[in-house]
Image 1 (cartoon, rainbow, N blue to C red):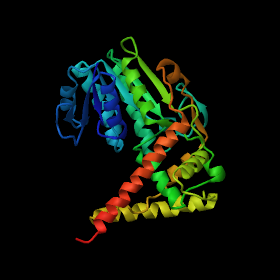
Image 2: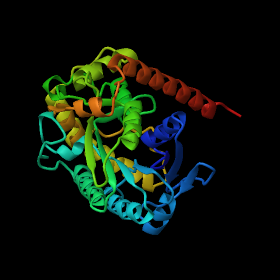
Image 3: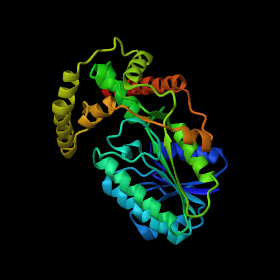
Length: 334
């Protein structure tokens, strides 16, 4: 099959392109900043005409686009229209568990979403609505709702967490860290996308699948395990009050400082990163994705948590080592 991967230069998209090619599919990577080449194109997903042109001759498009609310929601609407115009028969759309909002407990795909918890979840809900519209014209759509996507290369759920653990800004959070992590290995998400592209569906059909490893732990367990794996010990016990101060006072202040630094042309890459109120709420939330439908219908063999942890920790330690070598090279005289 021939597939266009939107957001093909991102964390999930780049890995997906590689796995598609390993599975003998033709994968074209598309992003707004790509340098055009044999297997990649530059396309603005908000430009309907350009997107329709890129979709001609494709058996499927897999939407991994990230960004702000407009990129997510308006981009999905443009994609649905462009795919119909180009005759592309299937959209595989990466959504998120955030569409379930404030729901807690075990949640399957038929659950009615709770109140929205922020712009991201709201934009993703709107995007799903636009993708559903594609099926009214006879197209097929598969919506994937992953939890927290991790593994080697994950800045968000491995590198950032590791740095906070090293700095003792994160550790055992007690009841504030007893929420379910809903971790899912990046390769499992990519395999789910490939199987979604291949899934037999009648015209005009949409399917939705939650994606989270059945053995994904609670956040406290993950924080402790990653600390041990990267030797960021002892693991610090943090009170709820300390976490709330970090999130509600320190987080906004650090966010503002980083914005000021960026505007001043400073390299803020190594400045302390804010722990946001949204993250603190996530670590406490008792939402557990029910991914049995994906296991059954997409034939997923989930990456075991211990193996994923080992891979992620090894990558993090390697990146730290490379960063130290680079810093010494910059500091060396001459």
